Image (cartoon, rainbow, N blue to C red; front, side, top):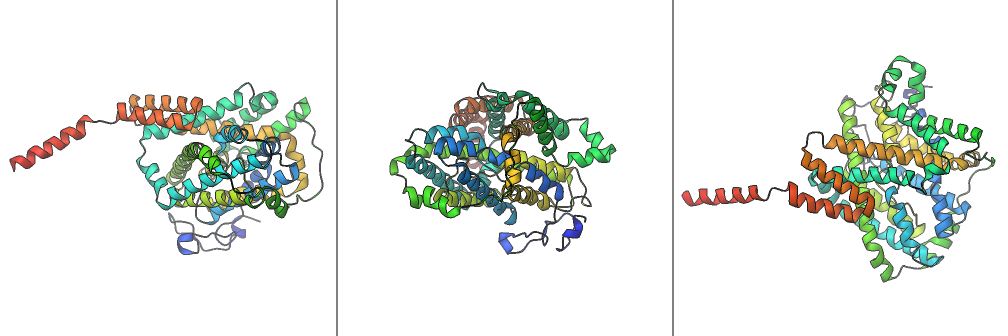
Amino acid sequence: MSQLALYFGPKRAHGAEQPYIGGALKIRLPFLHYGLELPDWIQGAILCVVPMGITAVMMDTLGIPWELAIAIVIINNFLYLLHTHFGDPAVAGWITAGIPLYVSFISMYPEGEARIQALIALQLLVALIFLIMGVFKGAEALVQRVPKSLKAGILFGAAMAAIYNEFAATGRVWTMPVTILTGAALGFFMMFSKTAAPLREKYGFFRYVAQYGIAVPFAIAYIFGIIIGEVQRPEISWNLVPIPFGEIVAKYSIFAVGFPSWDMFVQAFPLALAAYIIAFGDILVVNTLVDSANAVRKDEKIVFSPTRNSIIVSIRNFFEGILMPFPGLAGPQWTGGQVLVINRFIQTSRQQVDSYWGGATGIFWGMSIALLLGPVVSLFQPGLNIGMSLTMLIQGYLCGYLAIEMLRQEGTLQMGIAAITGAVLASKGAAWGLGVGIILWLLLERDWYKPAMTANAAQDTGIES
């Protein structure tokens, strides 16, 4: 059955937004406002290994047992659907680049309830910052008014941090180097190489395989890793994964461990600001990717609002911070998933993929449902590092390429500011990176002489008249 046969909603006029209900809420429902995009569902199901990676942090740092950790991951995954069901085209995710910083922060406290309280304080502050930036349209202003040199610098920093963390001495690449590098090579070839584009056009089989993004490279690398002995053979569990939400709330919510102390909020505040700065880079990425999709697929207008995105991110962080603190935090976008959906949408016609929303929503329907299936979770559990590493490497490549693209029409001065900003951000953290970038922009790029000359000229004209 074709995708169009599973879509029963109103047809979209050429160049218009996909239909929705609810007025300003822009509610879109499955089959009524978008159809079933099977490749994105399958891709999401295979990539369920990516969110599973955070369970190691929960178990090692917070002492949460596997059964509850995977349940928290599943609930978090379903919350991603708030975005695409309420008019935000972002393929949402964690504030990933800051995870080492969050772990260091909560590890300062004794094991047990104190660490949970510290994470609650951090997540509630992040929720508050996103709410303020959303309600007062601060995110809109940042996207529109921040100089390109600073935007590109943030993207450069995110790229360098993502790549460095994977290849560092303790990085994921070295846990199974042959497997991960094989998967990365296949993934990069299929998604970004000059050779792949004509192969997609000429060969139907390659086009069919390529539409699954990094799911196929992951699967090939995973099987290869098992064959060469780098990956353990999975032990299949034939059950549905339970979600004991009551137990999670009873043990880890704000009602169970108590409200964090004032000192915890004070100590968490700088990190919450840094998390927002990191997340702002993701807002820039999704804004740029949506613009690129609109430039290619003229049949559908995709509208991205940083304000809407920020408010939904705030809701997710408040929900989790109160009921089930999540160490990855709730962020604006998952770059790896975003590029998969955008690439497939751009590389197809309307006859093949009617609307962007089918893929953007389908990837999380597939992933979330797969996480409920014991056989799927147990099958992919040994490959956690492969999926996580592929995601971070693709994020690094994409952030770097977008930074260069953003500066294509700019001069060497802006490129230099972006390079230094990115290097400091990657090595010293988000607060340092942004601070250095702002100072360089004020000293080098901001023309203080011209405004003064303009003001003097206007004053002289007034005197003469």
